View (spheres, rainbow, N blue to C red):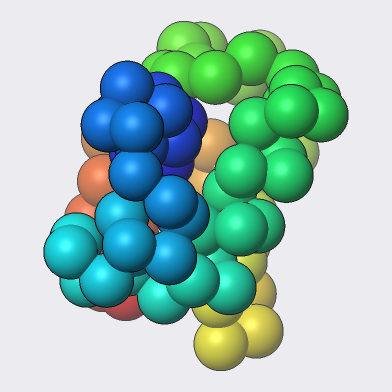
Amino acid sequence: MLGMVADWQRSGKSKKQYCRENGIAYSKFHYWFSRSKDGFPGPVGFVALEQPTGKDGIEVIYPNGVRLKVDADLALLPRLIHLY
């Protein structure tokens, strides 16, 4: 999303024209633009996962609201993510 905002700024086009040419909803792009000015809380990019030291387990919350709590097994995590 930040890449799209930067591409638009380099293009010299209006936001509406850029969105129309790139198949992006104007409202979504405007949201991206407003967020790019505010900055983002926290790091952007990948986050390193480390093996938990306790028996707390891992909780995966899917966008549809389903929650799975499983033993702390990082090898299982990619398979759980793939389920969605």
